[in-house]
Image (cartoon, rainbow, N blue to C red; front, side, top):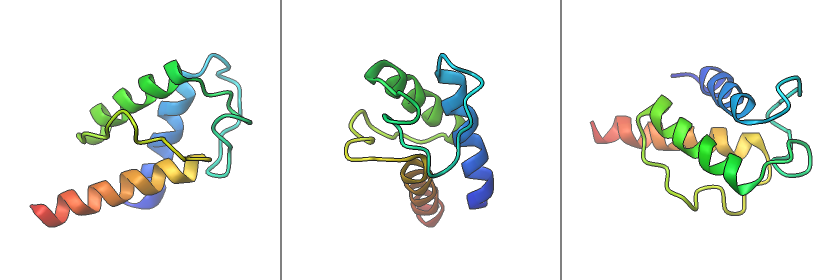
Length: 86
């Protein structure tokens, strides 16, 4: 899966978990400052990411994350590791 495909899916998942569906989301969007992401939305996003990408992300995966690109990088790295493991 390409980074662009991952990015598109991550943005769709985030948008579906936010109250404001009209918000523009980019990879540089700040999770708290721009998207007003709270802990409940973060848990919903984590669950949806796990379902979409067939991964186990973990409840503390977003600790220290600032923007959408951080999430995309995490998913990409996890998918790469999963592919290497076979």
